[in-house]
Amino acid sequence: MKRLFKQVYHLVHTHGWLADWVYQLARPGKRLASRWRKWQALRHPVTPEALYPVRQLTGLHGLIIGVTNICNARCVFCAYPRAVDAKELKGGVMSFAIFKKVVDEWRALGGDNIDLTHTVGDPLIDPGLIEKINYGFKTAGMKKITFITNGILLNRNDNYRKLIDAGVSEIYISTSGVDREDYEKTYGVQHYDEMLSGVHNLLRYNRERGEPTFIAIRFRNGKAPSQIIAAKEFQEKIRPFFSARVRCNFTVDFDNWGGLIRQEELTGRMRLRTIDNDTNIPCGGLFSFMVRFDGSVRLCGCRFKRSDMDDMVVGNIKDRSLLEISQSPEAWKIIEGFYVGKRPETCLDCTLYSPVNAQFVRGRAQRINGHLTGTTAPVSGDVFQ
Ligand code: SF4
Ligand code: SF4
Image 1 (cartoon, rainbow, N blue to C red):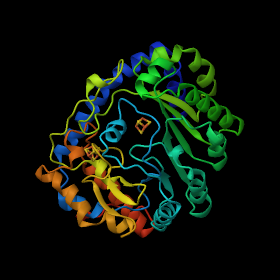
Image 2: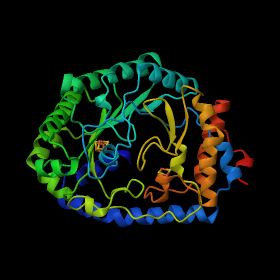
Image 3: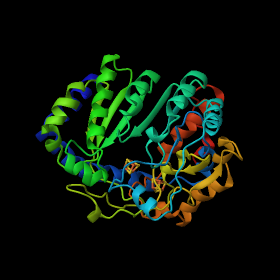
Image 4: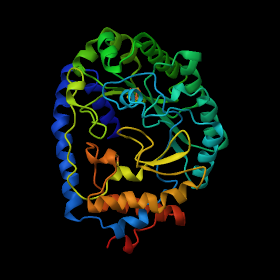
């Protein structure tokens, strides 16, 4: 079944007409899925009493350790250039000491899987990235380390080789497509050649080493998938490397970063997702924690509106442990606030809102109970009240 899925996936992403067709259908499909989730959430609403015991972070959940919130691109679909221009975002790079503290704590909680992507920022900006990856794998015992990059710095200092040699588990490349003009319009910078050459070198070197790293190119495309697939650069520099561990995908629709991005700011065929968040049930995104470069811990690692030091920050790793922060009254106040229509600024007009449902609670409870007892225990009755 897995093999068949991979074959179909490959077929879709290498045949332009098929990709156009599938991605066109994907938009209404996503809308339907979102309505289905909402219906499920409203059918048996999760109560605050049911949610409270499963709010905490355990090693069996994911953790984002954002190594830097500085970026070298200015994407039209991202809050980063707006926050920088408005001087609302204070950029920085995580010190090794903070990284070590977070990873060690995470390991002690049973965590062995980290994502190094800040809400905004490119991990390759961090000059100590390889040292951190090496520490994560070799000393802290991480089994999986992943991140997203725009690929601009892959060639610098032979980063593409160092990342593969360091054993990064998964690398996701975010780029616009294989057309210089479109790239410059969408990514707001003139680094097309470096990006394309870096991605090509990464794919080539990964192939030479036996594909130790899973790589996915995520096209943030303003052009139709068929136009990208037909492009010479795609055919010559990207497609030959597709395999079970190397693939690409296209973007169905774009998020608005808490209402910050407007449709008219996007390029070509890019479309914003519609807002559907009129439900007073907490969003599942609140349960994904992100450690900012300075040790601040934020609920929801994937979005902010004006700054990453906003009302989603619930503590700092320098003052309290990760576990304490996840169980803190500050974190619970934000989650509980949803029940009475009180949301952080970023959540107010967010198109990524996804209300929690009984299945979400059940999954977390199983993982928490299994983690605490060393088994995958059945769900405790008091979770469903
Ligand atoms: S989307 Fe990524 S690459 Fe583009 S500006 Fe934002 S953080 Fe930078
Ligand atoms: S509503 Fe949006 S910003 Fe808020 S937690 Fe959910 S995904 Fe994150």
